[in-house]
Length: 350
Image (cartoon, rainbow, N blue to C red; front, side, top):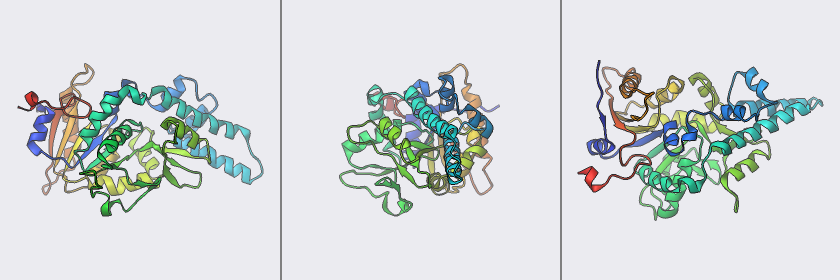
């Protein structure tokens, strides 16, 4: 049985020097705040008794997706109202689910001040890539890029302009915008708490109100005009893909961004789980991709690093063909210089 070499990040850098894109999975958030560890918002809400009225709706739809249930309640409200038969129970369920969602986020999310030093390191690390795609719903990456942009100019761009997503981002969004000396595009293939949809289907990015925090702005937005969050919290790959296709933004990212990430990809904190097979399918539609470097968590007694490497290698190489080779490398997720780990020192890089 093959044993895989697990390098340090500096070795991966020295081999290729420049990587086109990075994909961030749940492990990236866990590295900052361990309360994100494999907890879903639904399980947090259930544990805290926040879904007393709406629990049967989730069960009936066989889902843990807040967006799906919120939309179902909103549509039921509108249908009943149109028929002249409004049902206060549906309105109450909608209000409960919306409140449970924001309360669950507040329950697990760290304050900006708690992770400020991590954010500075993350921003610098992420700026080395042309594209960053994050599968996480939280604010960690967003806060990091805001901090970096504040210091360096508009370096990171998420292709939203005045709250509206610009589908023409491929034209000139990758051009540096002085005084920034580079440009990195950021996308959220599974959505984000930052993106909301109104009850007629229009999607927009939420910005923090003046004098208000971001979670407060989100709560305010969700409470008005029937806005619901656009992010994926479903269980299986098929369910996640169905949720993606309910969103204009997510569909665009899935079909236009993931298959065009360049020749080389770094993966940090992603488990290559079968439940995310749709993501790997989209990425490896890109026939130009030649190199993938994957982080390995080596500090857990519950995880066998070699078994993980074998699973990743098998998952990637099922896309191989006689005309196509993909070089897969592995590196220690805690090695200096990657994600929120301290930068590579002169001694480390020697």
